[in-house]
Image 1 (cartoon, rainbow, N blue to C red):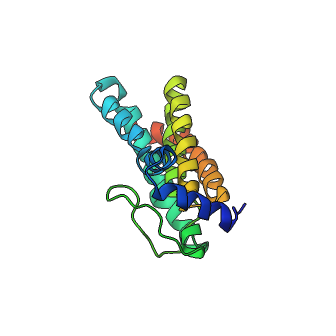
Image 2 (cartoon, helix red, strand yellow):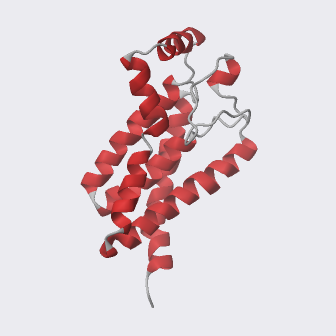
Length: 178
């Protein structure tokens, strides 16, 4: 699903100003992923949750580092800012500019869905909050011009599937003591 150039142009105009619109979507689109880092640190300091933290990290690595990277080799889709030729907001930490045609799937969406799935299977409240964060992160990525709706939806689906596999199949195999 593609969003029109005029919609992206309108969003970009709003993002350039000091409006609440710009602040909110820049925050969610670039830094919403920090929620998962905070939860990871919280889980790591609790000895009984370290396997969960390891499983969530495994899901993240599989989703972002394996599944997404394999798809980027075969699916060459330009990002909205590349097609419509506008300069999207950048972050020195999480959202660098790129010239690669790697719009599908959204790396932020696949990562957040993979981690949220693992959290959900362990603790539904943490997972639901995680899925809420994933929703805002995905919307932010679309509004900022990094991805199309289909990139984010595909990322969420693939991430949730990867989180499921990591939690129900790989975690027991890798983290169970013999």
